[in-house]
Amino acid sequence: MSTFTLKIIACITMLIDHITAIFVPEDYYHFFWLRLGSYELDVTLYVIGRAIGRIAFPLFAFLIVQGFLHTRNVKKYMLRLGIFALISEIPYDFAFYGFPNPIRLFEGQNIFFTLLIGLIAITLIDRIQKNYQKQLMNQQATPNSSFFMNFNIVLVIVGASLVLYWIRGSYYYNFCYGVLLIIGLFLTHRSRLATLIMYILLTGFLCGGVQFMAIFAAPLIYFYNGEKGPSCKYAFYVFYPVHLVILKLIQLALI
Image 1 (cartoon, rainbow, N blue to C red):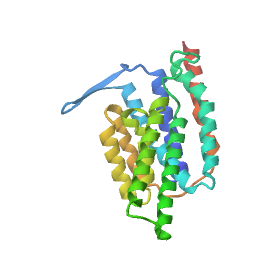
Image 2 (spheres, rainbow, N blue to C red):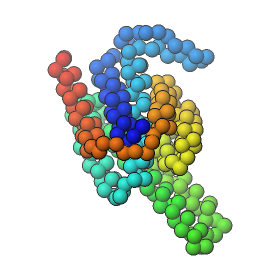
Image 3 (cartoon, one colour):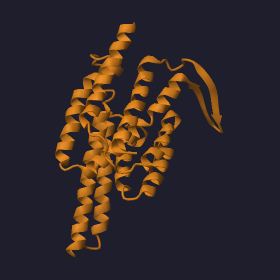
Image 4 (tube, rainbow, N blue to C red):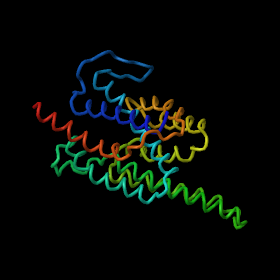
């Protein structure tokens, strides 16, 4: 799986998710009743569409980490995400909250805000880790250096989670799963097996219901081959706000 392939899969599954959220009523077309122990779920067309859509965010989170590891200028990377976060907010509110609707304007923020917060968090964690490694190389590390490194990393994780929760960014629920996933993918990026285990555990413990279907992104992440593939990065940025506007306009035209 190349970067390009993962982006295509993420966009397709996100599109299915948003088509379902905008056009399909939650109780439309019942397929069957699922019961596993104490877990019960009424499987409808809406549930299936949203379940497929759960694959998208983990792939975007993984690609943010890969982008950070390979970018030549992380500040420009942050700026790009920030610009598209602002550009996408009106299309996002328009699609899901009936913008302009000041009452619901701050109920949620688009996915670029979550990705940006995650990118800032892993950038800070990377600097903390490199500073500790520098102390070790220069023989300046003290017995407490490791403790302070981990303490500062925890502060970054808590701070990023609180910011995500405060702005109600995408995936702020489940203990701020969105940010925790990006950070977890970064901390385990040197080991494919560690990444897989972390992802399964994090998704298993924090995600319930339809959100648990995010587990199916695990093999896609595991088989990532590190290759970039065709380059058209701005197309993927533009796709997000544009497809939201188009879907909403279609919905309004059908009313």
